[in-house]
Length: 336
Length: 172
Image (cartoon, rainbow over all chains, first blue to last red; front, top):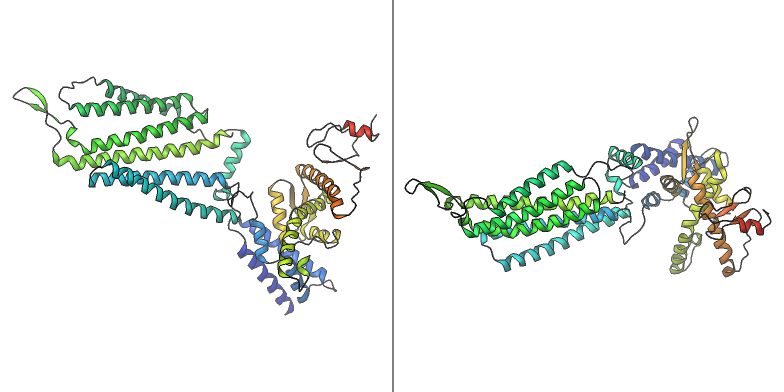
């Protein structure tokens, strides 16, 4: 009977420790090992504390009390990482990465919301900028608070970034570090060169305009030239990255940031075009004069046209987010 | 230690206990390393470490025994110690120092010894370092055992210790 009571006391204590242990100690084998070590320790101590050399109810209780509380044991496991303003140094890079990505998404969504609002409620530069500033301010403040609280809690629990990775991924990274190679190339040079080349060609065509222009609206031609300039610039950036290849990660990061600015500058011009569908040429063959005439887009297609422009803006924003993501993704190659 | 005393002014007891734990925190890790280091290739299991910790410090350095295992895990994660489980019998886990751990322990042990000697006068106590057995690197305080007289450089900071060996008449 007494043996059963003793065993229950030990099991109860071990169960409480198990409950209090942090979640990142997820490896079942390790969990089992930790608890087995503690149990072994209690029984050895209980035998030593007993005068007969055999554990007694009293000696088991004493041994358990010497162990400290389950919470203090768990707390010791959670003491992991180097403190740095409430968030540990180990978690800091991940915190910065997450906050940057979320900030980029917040900014992108605010721009998108403003664009949608400009489409349906009419474009007013003052309102557009005011809406942008207000939306971005609120979004950043809210996301900053939530993310910071999450990371402070994770730091207090002793989490490390690798606790969020699978065993397979960790092994892969370890192998990559051992061989001194990047995990995988961060760009496909040929793809970048071809893509950049196509953009440059289209950009040059838009700028030079080697086609009959007399039928087209001069404002439309001007917008086309502006788009051509942006495409030329962006294509050059992509091609440069392709030529550099999987080297000079810092240069890649700078190019991505420049590309991001180029993309941000395109958006207002797309909005202008979106709000002036009458500029879009619609050529029809005229049997009387035996030539093409520009009759302009029919108003019944205006809505479809606007949605098309919104889709283009969304794509531009998404590719901009991808640029930000790549800036952070490439960061780890800089230290290698 | 102060926690054991009953009936003390709570503010005094809290503050004293806080400082006591701060002093103990680093010291207990150092003492644990010292115990593991002393067992050398034989290794030592967790229970023996906690027992030695009490016995060798006259029960002055008290740690909650359950908290020993997270400390050991951390030291193992940092490559300072390694462990091996018994293949038969009670299948206890035995802990050993790694080469890196030995180097680190020698440095920390030297630093702590020199620090104790330096601050001894503040507490009106005497600390005598075993200068006949060890040389403390003048540059980084690393503890160098004088059994290996072939050694000419501190293995932590690379300082040339020939001058010190010469002064002690250990080399010509």
